[in-house]
Amino acid sequence: MRKAVVALLTALALTACGAPAAEERQTRDGVPATLRVGLIPNIAPEEQKAKYQPFAEHMKSELGVDVELFVASDYAGVVAALVGGRIDMAYLGGLTYAQAEQQVDLTPLVTEIDHETGTTKYISAIVVRRDSGYTDIADIVRGGRTFAFGDVSSTSGSLYPRIMLVDAGARCDDREVDLCPPLERVDFTGGHDATALAVLGDKVDAGGVELRILHRLEKEDTVPKGQLRVIAQREVQGYPWVMRTALGDRAAERITKAFTTIEDPKLLDLMRAKRYERVSAADYDEIRERGSELGLVEVE
Image (spheres, rainbow, N blue to C red):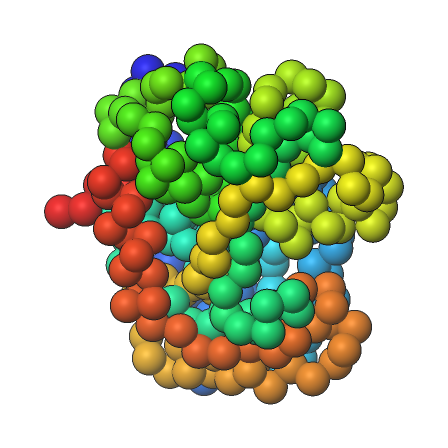
């Protein structure tokens, strides 16, 4: 991976420019008559789309509009869809939001209160095999071991593991994202599941994952419980639901209310939320700053 992440996102965004913008679209009390919603692919895209149908039905009921779900094959695909005007709002990781806002005006609306932390933050963790003998992140850095990130634009699977490595003494290159000496090699697996399995299968010595996704994998027995150990972790500001700012303040308020009034326990569980809380752009300043330092966000 010899090019900066932002160059990749910009190229993808340019491919989206052929899509027509949202001008002349019908609205209902400020919200587009067909609200197009993008989702980052935490699981297989078609599986994710089917999983979120109850959410689409809720938004349709609350807003009185049709709802179309869009799941790209990767994080950059969701950004390209936002930039090209093919979707109106999206559920993004904090890093993906920070990258996307360099190309299109976005308004962050809400994030979930996490079941595990009880706050708007969740946990990014570095994991090793139980029998590895590594006790902390310094063992990985000083020993020149191998490491797996998820998608390059993942907040908890790429940015925060990189932050933890750098804070422990690694010299991750801000121009070449696959160079992080003294680590011998870094891989990008494309997702949290794949990273956990790469560590479990001894393909790498350690990897960065979202802790609640690891817990899900253990619950499903995809990863046998206790076979992976956490040696470092950091809190991360929650995934924001963002809207194209061009939709206007009325749309922002109505869509926000549709989230904050969700009370159905099954729907909240589906969306990994105890409830929803409003967020602002300032809540993601750390992600912008550290992402810029590490070459993952281009801040003008």
